[in-house]
Amino acid sequence: MQVECTLGELSADHVVMSSSEAMRLGSTSWALEFAAAERLDTEKDDTFRVRTPEGKRYVLKVSNPAEGSDEIDFECRAMEHARAHGVPTALLVSDREGRLWAPVRDEAGQDRVARLMTFVDGMPLDSTDSTAYERERVGETLAALRHALADYRHPAAGRRCTWDLTHFPDLRPLLDVVTYDGHAVLLRSGFERYMTEAAPHVPGLRRQVLHNDFSRSNIMVDHDDPAFVTGIIDFGDTVHTAIAIDVSTALLNQLPRHAADDLFAEGRHLLRGYLRCADLTTEELELLPHLVMGRVIARALITLYRAAAMPHNSAYILRNTEQGWAQLAWFLARNPREMSRDFVEEAGR
Image (tube, rainbow, N blue to C red; front, side, top):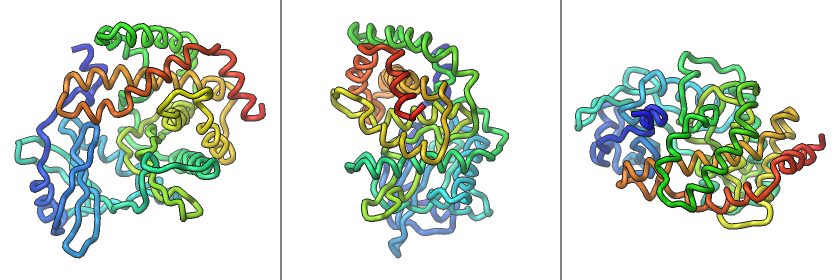
């Protein structure tokens, strides 16, 4: 029970929706005919790429039954708010009643929330390479998204998100679930370092509503587009959190999959673009490497538990876990003070 409370909606499994049922939602909720529905891999919901007979493409997301409509409304309006402030996002399609989301009871008897949005052109950043110049554009987009959401308010903004490092200390019970001794030693060492170097400072950091999942799979790009970034997708982890936590999540997703002398070689390009458009305090810069390490640890703990509990989705859940062991070893082999100093110097402080 303690673990389930810690993971919240991430501990809730559900009966998945079939592609044929997703196609029927087009007519029942949006007065649209879908000619095809292709399931996309996701963490906790059912998501489909759907197509009309005329060839127009959309994305249909049907929430996990554990997610409330207030949370989905928060995500939808955050995406609309960002789009209204110039950040490229998908456009939500209103349902038959003019709502941004549609309540549905699926064929398994589960009460859920469905959203339909336009398909964002481009390719996911995690499916292509990028140059230093392009990674700076990614950083600039992250800064633009921060500025766009700075004045966004919603009653559900204070919801709890498991992936928000604000709640990192609550993950401690998951350490007891790790069965392989080599991994357990790394995680316990990293956990205690984080609790010393980062956790005491997190409560005092600047906060606002932020995307909180600026991963390569959520960034659509086009090498022929001068802006490079063509769209930001998946606002499912959006939450009121620390600005430095949001940036650290973006940096985590620039780490190489294999061992490297400098894990932040590519992330520094993203940070350079970000700092060109948005500020970070000296304290925030000092904490960044430790927050990134915290995210590596959180990813391992959360995904190992969820993969064991939901083996049918384990391949997707664990897709980024294996690379984390070498990353965590890299952090633990370095002096935390020197890492903090490097980030401050990199910013010219």
